[in-house]
Image (cartoon, rainbow, N blue to C red; front, top):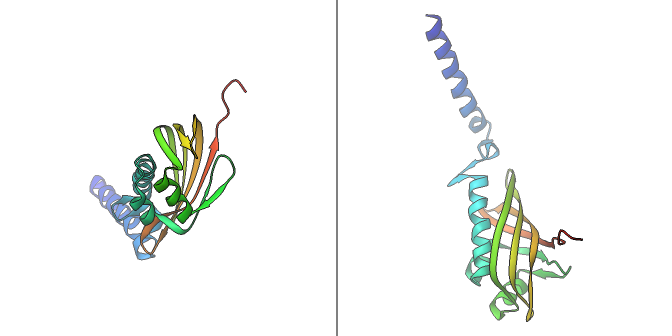
Length: 161
């Protein structure tokens, strides 16, 4: 009898823990969202963003860069959505290879921060570059869709410095 009561109590607690956030209108705050949890959704988008730059996929950028998007490049220069897309279309920025070593995601409701450490090689305005870079991506869910609002790229100094 004691075992049955314990099972019933545990079942009720489980139902409460699952139902309470929904009843309070906090379903999104639990990290669950349509198509997987926020971290899973942002992981997919962050990977797709890397591939979009590597493949010059401006269609992905049109869809997922917010209208107010800003990129802060490793040289300190800023670019907006239209300029970033034009840089990719024109070949001013070309990625030959990208190797992601680390990706950390922190979700905050309808906002997510992604921190990436990657090695990259390519050309920037016709000049070759290569090295390790840390990027910070700020994603926001707007009208049900995730959009990248800010991208900051920082060159990592070689270990000998």
